Length: 432
Image (spheres, rainbow, N blue to C red):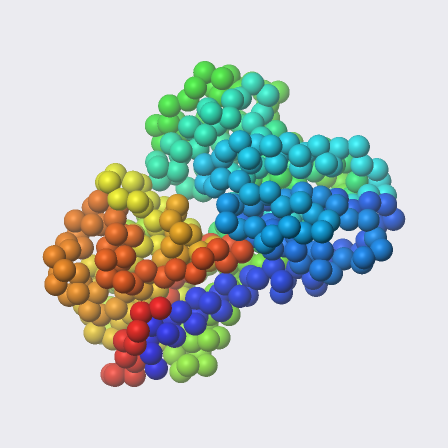
């Protein structure tokens, strides 16, 4: 079996399990007596809107607007407007789209339905600052948090308290209409209040936690934002608020389901899969070093599972960018993994973001092979120096081992697979 081809087939299966075309139709609610307004945000929003249009009765009212990342649109739809905006740092297009989305749900009645299509990336794309907060200040805070290595939960806690639409405020604006949210999860635990900063669900986080997150990561806070976070009236809607009485949230795609789809591919190819978890977090390089130790244990001692096997994991690691490289948590993980494996025979790995973008790059991730370090050395590339410089993309790009998918139009977080062969059951094959 071609190791590279098998790893790529597993990755593709993980992405396909979260395809909006496959998961949206079965989860659509029945049309209401009144109007249906579709709103949405995230990297899957446009593809989800397309699936809604394709399966909504032609004789029932349908309108709306969704916002997605630049390059993740699906062309003009007939009844739902698709807007593209910047991610992960918000821009004016996202600001205008968020305003349109909020305005579109105001003034609805009890017979109307708001169908909210929520997916990863929606938090940055719904960039409608709270009163008194300038978009430029919010952009600066977002950039600083992303570079600080702050976990996504901390970043979203801050975003929620600086927003006029997140943390349940979209649902509050839609009341008394019914709200059904179809959600593609990209977060550990699949918590709807965390995905895209929970625009349709109550928020249990607090202003104090937002202030603490900024302080913990030494982020400079502009005066207007500090004033907002010090104002008790700026607190988000909490569980039990009457605005959520007619809100239903359905998580229709999860990282775990995608990992299981990849595991089925491995099993069919004769490799025993072991899913280590769908919510692994931490510094990407540290997770890479840890995983190299587990792979060595399999090779040397047949534990925790004997070869041939595949160690599969998901979740969202972080990269604290200290060097001059472009970051990217999947390539950082892989570079640390390769260094830890040190050319261990019979071990290959793939890590990639299921949205097709590792950090800010139009590259999903990369592949590691037993000869990765040797090929790098032959080109005069020092793997340790590249890791210290946070230059995983440059490292794997020079080897021709990047995995490029283009926008996948979905997002269920990172996918990692370490394939461990027995004897000579695999061969290198061509790079994907």
